[in-house]
Image 1 (cartoon, rainbow, N blue to C red):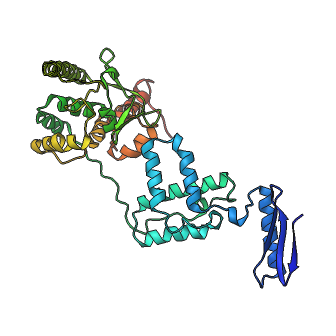
Image 2 (spheres, rainbow, N blue to C red; image 1 turned 90 degrees about the horizontal axis):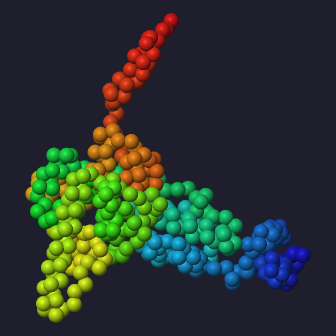
Image 3 (cartoon, rainbow, N blue to C red; image 1 turned 60 degrees about the vertical axis):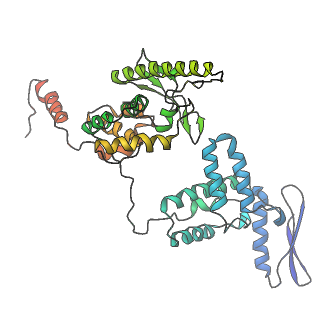
Amino acid sequence: MACIAKRRDRWVIDAYDQHGKRYRKTLPEGTTKGKAKEILREIEEKIERRTFAHEKKIPTFSEVAQDWLEQKKPNLRETTWEMYAYIARLHFKDIENLKINSITIATVEKFISIRQKADMNITTLRKILVTFNQIMAYAVRHRHIDFNPVRDAEKPRNQGKAVVKETIKVLNPKQIKEFLEQVVNQKYYALFLTAIMTGARQGELLGLKWADVDFEKKQINIRRTFNHGRFFAPKTQGSNRKIDLAPVVVKELAKWKLASKTKELEKKKEMEAEHKPFKGNELDLIFPNDEWNPMNFSNMVQRYFFPALKEAGCPRIRFHDLRHTTASLLLDQGENIKYISAQLGHANPTTTLNIYSHLMKTENQAAVCRLENTIFKRTGHNLVTN
């Protein structure tokens, strides 16, 4: 039974926690009996919810954050975990030593306000709050606190500033032809053509192996991605997919496979003649570097992609914009949105629409003409109105 008693003119709380351990606390001098009862009720409620902890055993925010990171590590891609760890290490200096149960909605809103006053990018701030929210949710699950204050705090706004959205730049068919005409290296021609005709992501292209190409069915299988110097499984189920190949891509890949195998064989003979070890393309990569190791993306873009764009007189776009180019052209020719979404590896068609809705035609005479034909020509009579 929890109770309060007066000792030497100060109120003392005496209780047993949810584990049966005795807890005694002498309240500050001047605490009234009413206030002491209020504190006692709060303690009793926490004991009942099994979230009560002795002050000395309450972890700090940084301790909970570290526990959360360790718990997340086996379930996340390494680069994603490193991003979370970077945010946790860099952006919570002002609250890292606070006891986890002392972080309130007011604490969170002050945290947000300080960063907004410092003109922190709104996107960056929202990423930090995602991490903050997950750490506090972890604290709730592990009964360090009763509720998640980040969830209920007022979220950051743009403060009247216009949101600058990423501009999607694409090449038109004429520009694509002029661009490809400037790519004289067979490997990079095959790479850029495959990128444009499939909409595959940069990491998916660099992770492709010859075993992933089904020349008979005219498809490539996306089974992995190469990013930050490492191979990873596709991030989502939708990313693990088969992409249809146009005949021109199948033909170019077949030509590049023959040329690359010939080059590898010639190099092998050269190395054997010099009595040097030769590994060759052991990884079976379609687009390796000259040493048959995974290609350096930055080097490829700087040495081959940007120069070809410049020579062709095309606007300077990012390599990722080749993916946008694929999507925009498929949309422009009226392909089914579900098919486009599947080809691109989006989680669902809604994602595709959210990204590319502004590229879709707002007028479609062919569609209304088909509707007219359905109503008036197939039925053999016109509608009658009063």
